[in-house]
Amino acid sequence: MPTEQQSGAAVVIAAYNEAKMIGEVVADVRRVFDQVIVVDDGSRDGTARIARDAGATVLVHPINLGQGAALQTGIAYALRLGAEQVVTFDADGQHRPEDALNMIAVMAREEAQVVLGSRFLGATENMPVSRRLLLRAATVFTRLTTGLKVTDAHNGLRLLRADAAASIRIRQNRMAHASEILEEIARHGLSYVEAPVVVRYTEYSRAKGQSGFGAFNILLDLLLARMRK
Image (cartoon, rainbow, N blue to C red; front, side, top):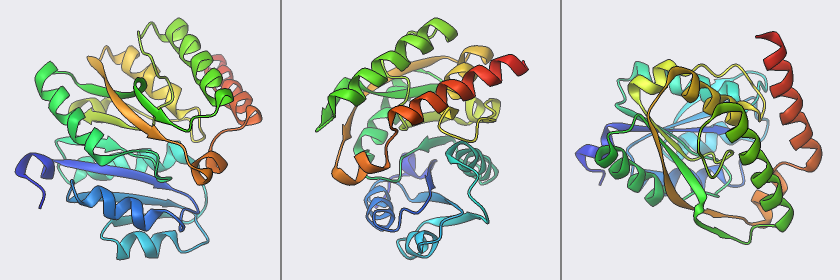
């Protein structure tokens, strides 16, 4: 059963056509956290029903708006419920709930507003070399543009204290939201630390991951957002 500390945190999972994995992911997270919020981002494959049956609170976008928009919806809902901390967690089985639990301990110990998961401080399983190179490049770009000394710029496992979650506004609906969250941390001067996590790459998660063309789209989204500022 979840402890009192664990019940103060809400886990937000953005899901789009994740019927194959979402039930297993929700059940795994609910071993540790009692409040799991799945935002079904316009799925057409039964994702919402399966997540609900697994014990999640399910919010539904009638159309696909993108992972950034889904996370914003879930974070806002978690804050309305009174969550003291918000965990963002990927829907494809890459993350471990035990790592999120450790991040809560790190947040308490370091008195940080944000804890960012880092696979490069922790470990990866079956990570493609091309993915490693792409993530290293994204990290260099993020360090140069935000000044944040992070080691992993696109890790979906994050822990936000309620005040930090309320400060962050995700406007990038597509995958560039990961970089935008870091920009928001820098802009608001939020205190942050990184914690080691394990990221597991399976055939399924690799198929759902970003291609080189997807990485180009992330960069384009970020550049366009900077031009609009």
